[in-house]
Amino acid sequence: MDSFKIIAFTHKNLPFDLIGKLHLNQDEQTTVLGAVKLNFGFNEFLFLCTCNRVELFIDSSHEINTVFIKELILFLNSRLNNVEANTLSENAAVYLGDEAVEHILKVASSLDSMVVGEREIITQVRKAYDFCNMLGLTGDFIRLLTKQTIETAKDIYTNTDIAKNPVSVASLAYRQLRNLGIKNDARILFVGSGETNTILASYLQKHKFANFTVFNRSLVGAEKLATTLKGKAFELSTLLNFEKGFDVLIVCTSSNEVLITPQIFAQLNGNETSKKVIIDLAIPANVDEAVAKNKQVNYIDLNSLKLQADANLQLRKNEVEKCEHIIKNKTEQFKWLHKERRIELAFGEVPKQVKAIKDFAVNEVFAKEINLLDPNSKEVLEKVLSYVEKKYNAVAIKTAKEVLLNPRD
Image 1: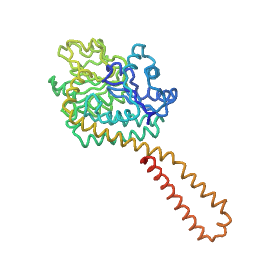
Image 2: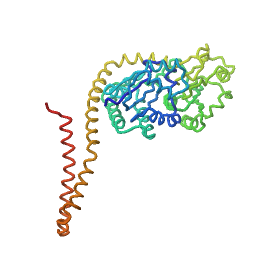
Image 3: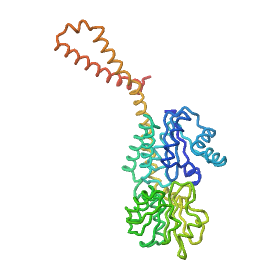
Image 4: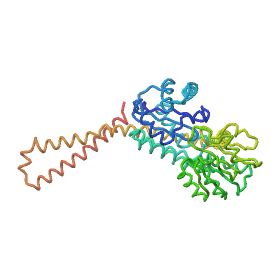
């Protein structure tokens, strides 16, 4: 397990806009991740990207240091300047072996999340695995680890109160809206129709908001969310021409560029004098700093939500301790599962070899004697040999596990 490493860029050690420089959408992942694995000679590779973290799961003999991390992230994003690359590589968190296993169990169980207790992360981990597995990047170790990770998260969400009255980034954003006194007939514009905006939209719809307009780079994506919300859908390219005004603007896309510029804000705002609410959940921010600081705007971003999340962590401190105890046990359990799996893989050739020995004995060594037998005797002999073959394979693996997993002094 010593070859397993995690390099993590998270809200705990880096600003959101810099983490966003490492975000890759699925098209970019399809293009880049296979090349990363090949270029660096990784045995297995998984890329996890969420609204407040980018983590790289690696099975490799590479030594992980700042020089290597810088080379790796520049391969992921060649547009990084030297200052950005240095800051990312110097502030990345690195986990090795057992520590790395424990870390991913904490991540999927939300203990390492900006909002402790939010359930979205377990889905994000599963989707990241499914996508990287589809690209052929993962192997037996990450498959086994992902299975243990998801089972651990489910155990924690079921048997502790860590997710009691769950608070996600989306629900925190909704609470801020509610505290600002936004009425149910408010005109709400969504820019982006991805997972985060979709979750927030469901909160708003659940609480009887009904006036929605969705803009997305692809019209198909906009229409999908707009249909659910019974709203209108437009391509993102038409945003500058929208003239019906808004009360709340919710922005979250994978774009690395600012989308809500002063020019677009002025167009959307028109001649209205009422104060607007803008929620920017993108990394990096999709809203221009000048717009965010506009006196006509109540601006909500991930940084402001993080303050609420920190307060939330204090309320759940006792549950966190319970979860950490479960994770310690699950980490130890995984170490045994991994050892057992290695033995199974090592003995994978044994059945083939035993079968080859049996076939050689039947067809070569004792061929003459067996040919003298009548058909019924041959059939009985074949059944006996097959039974012995099957039982031998099972006993061999069982014995190996007992000897290797329970060594005696």
